[in-house]
Image (cartoon, rainbow, N blue to C red; front, side, top):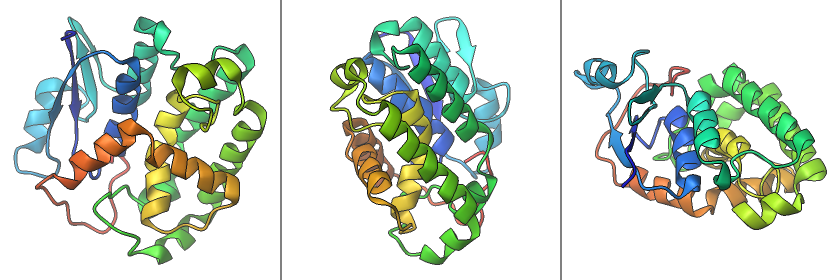
Length: 230
């Protein structure tokens, strides 16, 4: 097993943990994972043992520690170039980085009102009304990427069947995967292109593996509006 450990929050709730975990799965390397339950009495102390920011995820690779979701993804792209975590085409790669950074930094209404919670089953559809501008922007990104780059051959043959934003699965898809799950959970009405993309993400084997692990978790976090760190 490679000397890699990723530290995660609850799989039901931690969207930031899901993102680099998907990227790490895409590399195909063996790794250890440690789930630190959130909102427990000892959560903060346990997280600070492994992450200087006091937040998860964090990734340790030998003597190297990385503790931000997008930074972890970039690190994995550097050390496992054969995984094709960014599109090979320069123009596509530039757009993929741009939309990933936009997801990383923005969409606060979506985060506040549609927190990731895989334990819910489309029971709070009214929440979407408070995040319509963010939903419109996300789906515009998805349509644009699918139209301009979705059929890029190299990525499509290397990392999947071409159903993702840039053909095959990339870091951009890892960044938007929690949003795809949210749209399912809250029953957000989607255009056909966006709906097909959500299905592609949800049916991706690594996503199904994460969802199955989330379903088996014994922990429940009960609060109405989640922090942006989730």
